[in-house]
Image (cartoon, rainbow, N blue to C red; front, side, top):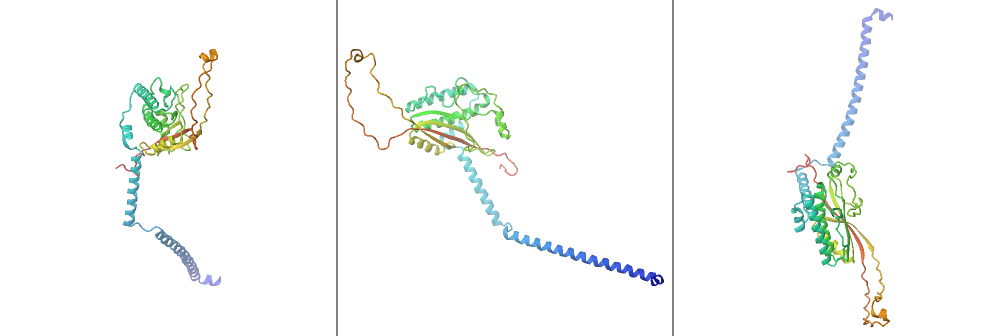
Length: 332
């Protein structure tokens, strides 16, 4: 203490110098630690860069050309798919070019002509149909559809005619029915496009109408936003060969119709008893014996007996949904 009092300036300078040395030492240590941390981070980044360069090499002109060629192949395949889904041949061309009626009365008379034409076709081909068969259009037996349903109903009529002709050409024993999906109003179509639930239908259900059915969504080809479809269901009685002929016809892809399901039920044969002679014949009145009928030789029994089955075939008409044009999908 005496020394400090005798030389205060000297000892003060020594204290300040000691503090400066301690601060400098701490600064050097801190910078050294930061440098080591930065070095470790740099080494890690270099390792990551080397790994990325090894896995994903930088794009080259060759890789760019390969990607562009793959894009052209994909676009060509998509264009081919679009063209095939338009159908091929005179049937598809006629479907596209036939003008759609604009008035409900025009559709009504068009449907009447269609029904009569199909009945005559079935009769000429010995295919049994009900006397009042309307081939899926009982709803419009007395009047045409509402105006906003005309395009859908008319297209369903065109597809139904193609399907019924295909069934008749397959030569079944009987055509039992054709069912179609209920056409949707503009409000319902807008709700589907917006991803909303369908509003309750305000249209009254016609009594006894059996036109419509609902396809099982598990077998439908629909993909919201990409693929649309319209379903039909055909039911007929025939041998297996008729079913095979129908499926082969649909496989020609004249129209983009895809078979979604085939259901088979056996048809039991009903035995008919021999008819008794009428009560007003001479043999019945006077008890005289009727002349014996000529005995026909027994026909040989085939080894494989032909059997009839009831077939229910569900098909869908496929349509691709046009994607809206965006910056990512240019239209040029």
